[in-house]
Image 1 (tube, rainbow, N blue to C red):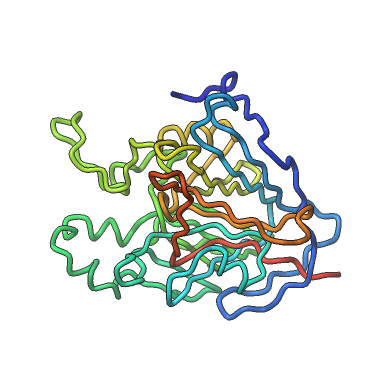
Image 2: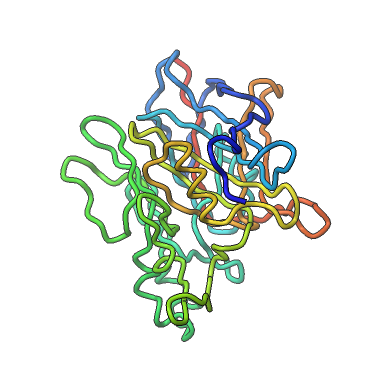
Length: 310
């Protein structure tokens, strides 16, 4: 079922406009402490929507809205960790699962840069590089799209671009997280989702299950540089969104650029709530056949550090 503005309605499931509390940020080796945020400045908010509507929902869509110029960090772990563990170790306001990885050896299949340093390199993953079935795709795998944070003379800028793209002249690359495909402004699913077709119409390969409903994670950038973190949780074991449905939802949310992140069992989000005694709430996207949430550890995450008290 395709969403539209009237049917979707974007009905609020819970906690409209929740403002995250301001507390002291603890320095961590995997993420830098951001510049202090002025008290009273706009703060990240979490809203949860039933999609396409309350009475026939197949997904719950968790949307974290992050104001322009607000610092977002990237973190990566030597071992795989759940978003809850990342959150506990970094004391972050919010944590979203990130890029692709190999669950068999816990090595990355995506480039990850933290604080200007490349900290995860898929070229070091021999199961990826030496896999004959992937030889045709390896150049594209190594030049996937990535989410980037630039530190520039006029503040923080965010962008979605391929790994080999140059950094703007007046900026330095602070962090980057590889994933893909891009969904907006152009759909790169055929090149970055590694889909193959026979006679241009019959799908024979769909590496990320783009045409099946599933749990999904994505990051969007609006025209004013507002960020949207999106985690699509299944309302039932066959629920969720296709990539086309996710694209349409992000367009309704006024995202101009969208990058698909690792999805399925990896889709997960943790956030601190002001009305839960300061305790983090964790949401997992994928359900097993019995309707139980799957808590899968991941390699990398996006996180919102707590701003320093002023």
